[in-house]
Amino acid sequence: MNPISAKIPWQDALGEIPLHLSYFEGTLSETVFRMTERYPGRIAYEFLGRRTTYAEMRRQILAYAASLQALGIGAGDCVTIALPNCPQAVCLFYAVNLAGGVANMIHPLSARREIAFYLKESGSTVAVTLDEFAEKFSAIRQETGLQHLILARIRDELPPLKAVGYALKEGRKTPSRSADVLAWRDFLRLGKHHAFTPAPRSGEESAVILYSGGTTGTTKGILLTNRNFNALGQQVIAANPMFTPGDRMLAAMPMFHGFGLGVCIHAMLSHGGCAVLVPRFTPRSYAALLVRRRCAFVAGVPTLYEALLRQDAMAGADLSFLKGVFSGGDSLSPELKKKLDAFLAAHHAPVSVREGYGTTETVT
Image 1 (cartoon, rainbow, N blue to C red):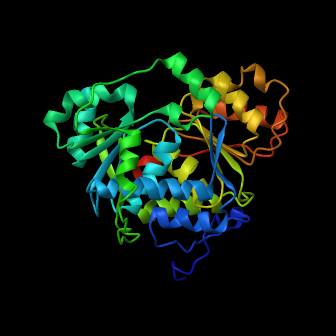
Image 2: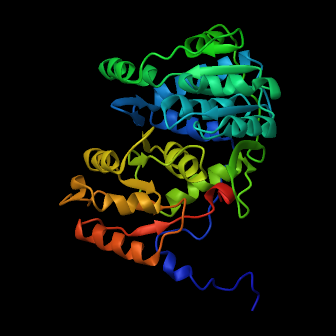
């Protein structure tokens, strides 16, 4: 028998999941913009009580892209994004893509020497981080090719009352500024009078750099294409035929990780879903948010799931709204999986835990 035409042994176990997919050949931003046209009034993401529609997200992406282009970002240029899961990080990720650049995603809590490595490894000329991390970038910029440092603030994306509370709790940090350090409002002002022109890009061109310790522990940059990420998004949705546009994903996995960026963010926004952005959390706050917002999909690491079993908010909770529970970032022991699956069943969830691995390294 011709092996190409032979029946795949596991084909019958796929159920509603298609054996083959036809992949979109455009860019990341094009994929998301298709959703902004299809579902302009639907909520794209939630952030600490503030909800943003697909139409508003599109406007933000275009505004950010215009400012990036005004700074000189074009085809193939790297922009380092060192932000937690917040609206600026999401819109910047797609804005860099729209301007033709490559998003270099790094941990915002990275040490100075790590930041220097990431900037030099990627050749980034522009970096975006929170104002509270400005000094780390300023301290190493002379040894890198960094030309512009842009400082975002979490409180700018909060509802008014929460913004005041956040400022009081965190304090008003005022990092030292120079001509090449831009406050967020000044960055946005750059694009207001710039005639933005989207850079022509294809699915096969580079779009993202993620980092992994691999098998040796030495950090390695992994260059991924538009097609890599779009394929991941399509595969996630295809493997979850119960997904419907508008479903919420509890996006707590970090955006500098393939699982967080590809599964929690891009898979949702490229298919009309809603990402509930979580910049930082505890098992207690995660459990409370999951139950309160009735998120259909969740992704987390094994240690988080183990801690969730002990949270008061989960006691007696009806989890019948769950459609997908994904574990990644570390190995899930058979014992813990069995315990989690039993917990889900006891709380009326119609799903079991599914494990993902290697998403940063392979994406597809």
